[in-house]
Image (tube, rainbow over all chains, first blue to last red; front, side, top):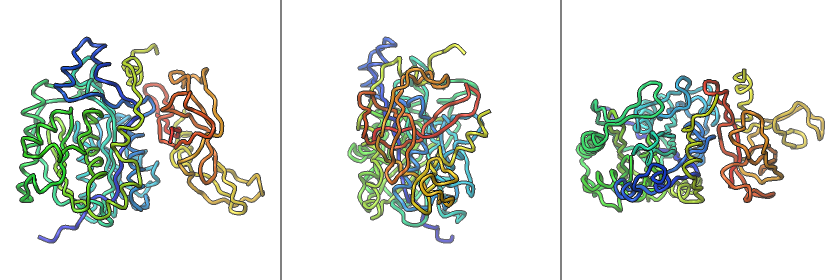
Length: 353
Length: 129
């Protein structure tokens, strides 16, 4: 077999909305016990998109930060792939607006991806592949979501908003993609039918046979494929539907809390769906040192996981401060809203026509 | 029908493309045909810097109908680094925090939509830098 072309990340960026709502505030309205949600789900608060923020606006901001971390001329970007389950339009691509905003049109291939929480890593996988195939010099991949949980449902405590963008290339890499491996089955754990506003889920079935089975399957697959073990990695990032699951799956695989810590954003960010593990990766790149190896595994209901092994290069030290750090966006100047404001922001209030 | 108007405005609303007079260097946003300072007709297209300072502002309490859910909100004139001025909403902060000289940056935001089924218009707003 011919030697595979070296590809990886040339620029990265994330975006976190400013508004937050605390678990206590949601629990107050629905008469539930905040402490049990905080302990049971490992969540304290979550990000809330303002009415003027959506998957398109967050993707644009994350992509602009990714461009600030590299010297790539946007016109050399040959593809824009956006993964989300909350594309603002049912019919009309997110990618064309993003490409237009960064000045990458019209010499470009755009596609929107959808696969519950896995759409972002899917976009990353395809972007890496088209660059590796030599179809183009650079491809932009984004994972972004403004997810909705039904009022009063357990999902409402976690469904959050955020985005991460990665410019994939073959040169000036800040992280090399060493390997990928994907693991999928037909598992109906979470879904949303056409014309439904809120998603449905299968309760506890979303855990063991869904999240854990697929992340463990992807992890075992990529470790076998590369001959690596948990101690070969400086950091690990797992999909974060809540605070607890990524901690638990990391422990099951033999990773320490220190290894998952930098990318473990969910306790104060919530679940950003397609943005979740991509944002965990961007937060990890913010602190990674040259030579560090990072394992990243996404999870999307329905169900499947994409796994990636990244090796950070010397270039990380030159570019990491060229745009805001993910954790700084999460922690600096949060604006807390009450449930009424949150309900208005998220379109949960039925108004007269 | 705002779709054609949205499409026409994209160079300015999405990418902040301005005209810079090739003769005297004055920056116009949106671009214009003749320089008001030196009457030259030759311009180069530049992109405005996303960082700037509030030159002046007001609070809108009785907005146009499509912005009624957002009222009250702050509107400001922002002087951008390297030249050019924009008029934009200043969001993600309390009115008490908005003041003349405040550093802000441009972000890409949803501006308006034609009801529940119409086209969505995107553009620029300013947030504290």
